[in-house]
Image (tube, rainbow, N blue to C red):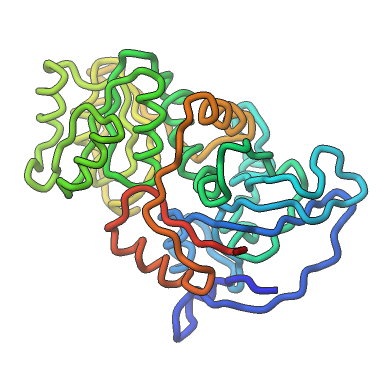
Length: 338
C-alpha cells in the first residue's frame, strides 16, 4: 500500500511517497480505506518542521481524512465494515474542556495522519458521517470546519443578529461564514482579492473589505458597525493582525484566536482588551461532542463545504505547493481512493 511521509531534509522535497505494509489490526482498532484528505496551513508547517513541536522524520502527515471502514477488531462495537467515517484531529478529546492528555496525540503531527491509503485508529478516534456528505466534502471537516464551529459557538457564544468579522477566505473563514449565516448572524469578511470577496458575498457575506486597498480595515469595520465594533472575530492571522482585530471589537466582544498565518514570532499589544472588557480565547480545533453537533447542523441546514480544487493522490506535493501560493478559496482536497 502507499502513503506519504514527511522527510524535511529530503533533497527532492519534504513530502515523499512510500510503500508500506499495514500492521495486523488490534482488537480495539478500526481500519479505514481513506478516500479523501484535505490540507490545512498546519500541514505546511509540519512538512517544513516549523510546527509547535518537532516533527518525527517519516511521519505520515494530515489530520483530515474520510473513508470507508474495511475491517474492525473483535472488541469494536460502535463501527462496522462499510461505515463511512472521518478522522478526529484529537482522538482522545471526546468532550468537555481539554487537558494535556486529551490533546496529546494530534493526528498528522504527534501521531501518523491520514495521507495514506489505509488509516488505523481506535473507534473513539473516528466519527460516522451523514449520508448527505461525499468523501471529499467530509474530509474538509476535522480541522477547519470544527475550528470554525468552536470559534463561533463554543468560545464565541454567537447569537442570531450578532456580527462576526472573518479574516481571509481560507478554509476556517469560509466555514465560519457558512455557519454564521446559518445561525442568523451578520458577517464582515476581508481579503486581498475583490473576486474572492464577491464569491464570499454570494455565500452570504454582508460586507467585504479588501485589506490591500483598505489597510486600516479596523476603521472600515467600525464604520460598518456604526462605531460599535463586532461581537466575534475569528482571528486566523495571528500576531500580525491581532491589534487590528482588537480595534474592530465591540465592548465585551470575543476574539477566537485560531491561526498563525502572519507568523509565529511577531509581537502584538493586547492592551485594548482592558478598556473594552474583551476576551481572547485560544482555539485548538475541538472535541468529538462539538464535531457531532456540527454534523447535525450541517445536515439540518444543507451546508456544503466549499472545495477550491481536488488533486489526485500522486499530486499531493503539488497540492501542498498550491496551498502555499495562497490563491485558494475554501479547501484543497487530495483524492486517495478512486
